[in-house]
Length: 457
Image (cartoon, rainbow, N blue to C red; front, side):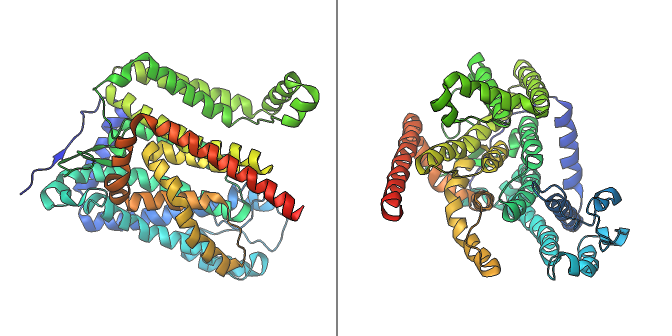
């Protein structure tokens, strides 16, 4: 029988690592039937949480639909027809069947979608666990034999729980984006921070790279920031990498600020006045204080992990930060270029923060894959949306989430079977290829805008 190697490094002795190890060990000691039953319950609860976020924390108009609404929240709407919630209303699935009594307020079928969300989460979580932890669906085909799957099960379980958390964040982001064409920061900011923490706690949350790349795989290694090149060990411990990490963290915090840059002000009143306008916008609202606190905590945390001497924690944190930068950066860059070329907003900034959150969980390689698979998912989403609502306009966030799910499900074919080899072959010119493609996209969109102006005025 073929010998297959599971590559990993010993984890440093941080208390979150010890706690997580104990939780995983307790989980795997349970009978499989009990684990699957618990996943059904967890899926129902995560679906209920997603529904609560969708209706309670929508950016523009919160609606009194969620069964978890408090009396104070319901009183804001001053609608006597909205009935108080009982404990039976808060039971997943059953609660939505009971809330049909409010169909005359919210619409005849308002309860169907949230009920399906909870039911879907209850089905998807056990299936995802079976796929990632038990069947080794992320592994190359040559590694999916019984003896190696037993060795991989612990790592597959860790990956599964990280992806379950990501899925629980993407579901409300997707449906709020469907409803209001925006993604609230209350999902993406905590989600991004959580992704960074998870990456720090364990390298094993990152999906596997099959080695040797492009050959007959004999081992797997977590897909970290330097995959698939894997240079000399500990080269990421130099001060240069701390500066890169801080630059990524600072840029992300600045990007979340209430920025109001105006080229019109710069042209009419000068660059200095435009900068003043930008600074005034950032400090006008109190949110900057929260961002400053987040930045300071992140600065302390990143520095402490870097100086701790624990290479695994820093390796994982840096990999998550690079995933944040590439995931959010590619959408942000395209947004800037496309908005300039078409003289209109191309994508919302919520798409940027969403992709940054996704990148923090799955790394930069999977983020790129998710971004390029998003248009294929869009075809199906647009058709389904049009059949249901007759509205052909679908925001970009659901595409990104669907592309992420496609990347996870087809990871071995997409990354190990194609992407990793091309990355290894392209090597240092990858950045220049991306810059050239972005420039070409800007030129094409600009020419198209000129053609539209000529043809349609």
